[in-house]
Amino acid sequence: MSNQLSQTSVLFVCLGNICRSPLADGILTHLVNQRGLADQFHIDSCGTGAWHVGNPPDPRSVLVASKHGIDLTDLRARQFDADSDPSNFDLIIPMDAANHRDLIKQGTPKDKVRLMRSFDPTLTGKTPDVPDPYYGGDDGFDKVFEMLMRACEGMLDTI
Ligand code: 4NP
Image 1: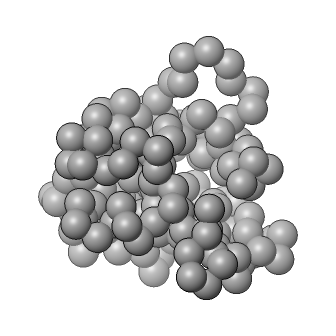
Image 2: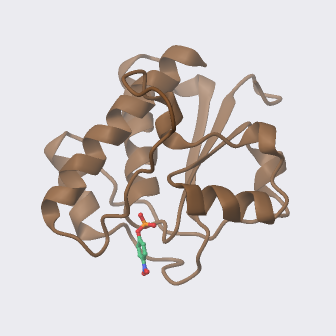
Image 3: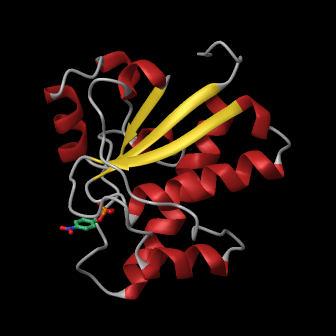
């Protein structure tokens, strides 16, 4: 899967674009930098909802990322654009089944959409959600970080 620049373009999608998908964006960006693959990827994230458009990531996502040497502070939330995102990205990665349904309802081609945890090689059977940590405690963000890291590593091993 490549665009005109021979890059693979990956769009992570959650509900608000302040907790899960910016963290996934930061983790995959970090991994491709570590592996010397940065020029082969275009990575972005967005939310299906508009509540937080223009806002930086949730401070709890910023904190857990920084504990692992990943800087999210330059990211700003934006809403999924059903007119342009499906043609601009090779892979569109929702965090949970509700995000997945929203993308399909808005006309995103099914073959571009893959649930985030489907890339985790340690999981088998039905693909679980990356749970929304927004209303939970700080430890939810640590668990989400670990899930996202395993899925991002799996993604790089398969694409
Ligand atoms: P996210 O988490 O989808 O991982 O960014 C959420 C952030 C905000 C809200 C819901 C989920 N909210 O309802 O404002």
